[in-house]
Length: 314
Image (tube, rainbow, N blue to C red; front, side, top):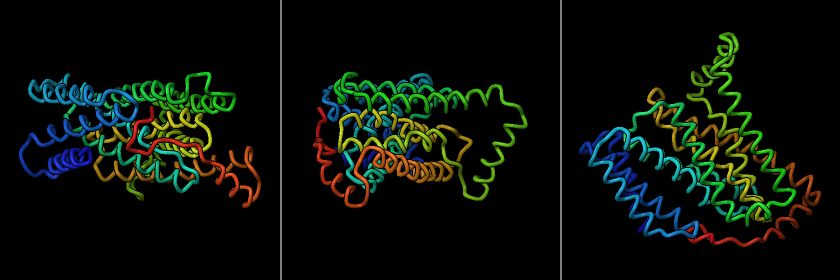
């Protein structure tokens, strides 16, 4: 039933993009998707899916009826954040890298549907502010859930503290560098950096989102791989919203076409998985058994159980 609701909502959103059908299809599709996503997130995290699902439905319908710009923008923020967090929560442990890559693709797909629902509310936004707000709220939401899944801060251990510290530093440096460059970067430096972006957009059709590529996808792949062995992997997965939040808000910028958004997400996923593969191999080299036989023994011992994708984690 859940897949049917998401499918119908997605069909309405796609029809509105074409465009085919009445003008209210995008709003109805957005409400259907955010209702289903809120239900799934509550169910997955051990909450009350009926309460949150009905609440999302009522709020979404009220936004459509009142048709106020502020309410539409607020609904878009809620949809983007719920989509980003749910995309991470729906992942499962991965014994091998191939499985981790699949989980990253699933997360990006879930967030991509959320991106269509986000713009389905027709928000009136400052693009940069919207991106920062949704990323910050998604990070807070993901860490709040992972705090419970990872058994609190005392469940981190020394290894968990190290990986969370690394993720926090990468996140802070990426955001700070982007903001400093935007505000205080010299014209020559900005033009030099933009030359690479322009070349990629001219020859490849798009440029990958840096935070998705450098932090989000590698952290999610490594986190899923670690979760098959240790619950501390959830703390790494929390940084996966650095990939899913940019995907979920990717369509908000009207200056970028739908095709370019899709290619940008795809390139970020591919390059991020390459970085994730390197990080996982380095981690196994430093902490696991050496050689092919040692890796097979290590994979055979990675049997930490977790509920399936459709079951509650708590």
